[in-house]
Image 1 (tube, one colour):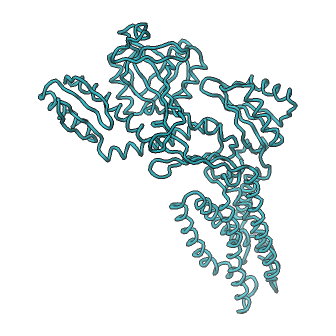
Image 2 (cartoon, helix red, strand yellow; image 1 turned 135 degrees about the vertical axis):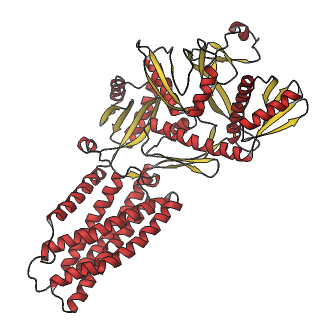
Image 3 (tube, helix red, strand yellow; image 1 turned 90 degrees about the vertical axis):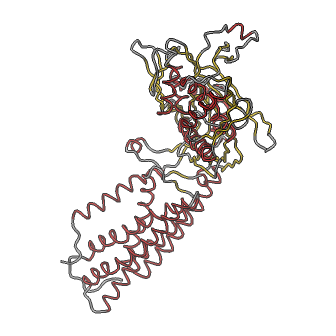
Length: 614
């Protein structure tokens, strides 16, 4: 008999809607004003600190909703924004500068939903509030570091090849290698040209060979500087627990960073401006550190203080920089002594292998380098950065190292964890500066949400009234499908990890509310035509759905293609609009065709009907 539902189809539809409804449920619980406590480079957040935080708040008559310790962070949920601000100020004074105390918004999802992996939709800056930074990478420093790498590589390669040179020095935008005679210069030029295809070599007066980067290599250095800084900034933000950050490239040398929910702009700037790098160098054992402290520093050495303020005499030659580190984890060796296990990329493994081959049994230092802004600007209007260096670890090389090795000689598991975190978070290839800053307050975000919800509600009400008046009982079925469609859209948006709802995204939902009934209008009008042509009610329902399907599919597929193009070529708000548009098209086809037909079949299918209320 026509228009009967199969049990498996009914169960599948109910399961799909139920699953989407379950994952849409966290969105009704809202968010709490929260204060997030995380550790700086020289500190660790422990579970014992929860008691200290609770006591500090109690002494100042602040009653938190909860204080939670998770993933080496403490999250304090508070009842109001005023309590949040007071708690942040008190905890900053109590804990000192070794800890990051940042205001945030935390989802108030029940534990049973969190255990199922359900979480609310991710909201963009325009809806949730937060900070937006546009950052510029200092390309001159990136090129300078690449020249330093080339300089060190030339020394190693020429020594291994047995070609004697006088000096290898880095100048403005090239490396100058001076030789003792013309014959050695020509042999070295031939050798280095074959070994370094991306460099150009020119002979100059006084037996000097000038090595400079080709244009293609300079472009690659700039691209790599931006890409690596993006990766490392994302790692830093993730380590601090910021929910759904946006870190992406803009133009040739700029990076966009958006931190939804972050209300503490000063703290966010401090985190992102901590421009740092790492270097591995050998400790100079051939000269007396006391003589160096008294002013007699050897030509190939440098004095750098350790974390305790003690001067350490290191070789100037850099064995390896932190940009070759792919992973770092703390642990213990077979004797229970703390260590850090490090993994390098292939290029870094080769460099480390060459550098440690003849240095077994000698101490190697890990140097932490930070670039801090002086507040001054150069002739181009860019911030001037000052270099600060510190030895954070000295370990003895036990064997020739490669792509994987370990750092030992650490004082405690805490020191091992801190060093691993620092290495894993990465080293920025070049300093960065914030050239643009925008803050969206949570009150403005709440206002945007309210206005967007009003647009959705009033658009929905208008469509519901029209469908009920014009199509009667069939209109009511379409309305049920329309409400189901909204639930499914929210559920799907909540389930997709990278999907973020923005104000233009809400406009996309409003549009899909109208588009969702288009399919039902086509189906219902076709059913009316079949009845006018003398078909029975059962035949009219069957042919109405079947005949309208191809038209509905064509219309929605063309819109879906347009949405895909918008997503591929658009940025920011356009992407947000295209995401909800594409999801809305898919869900509206499901609810308008499958759900309404299932309800229609359940009400009128499989029995004698003389007249349809349409």
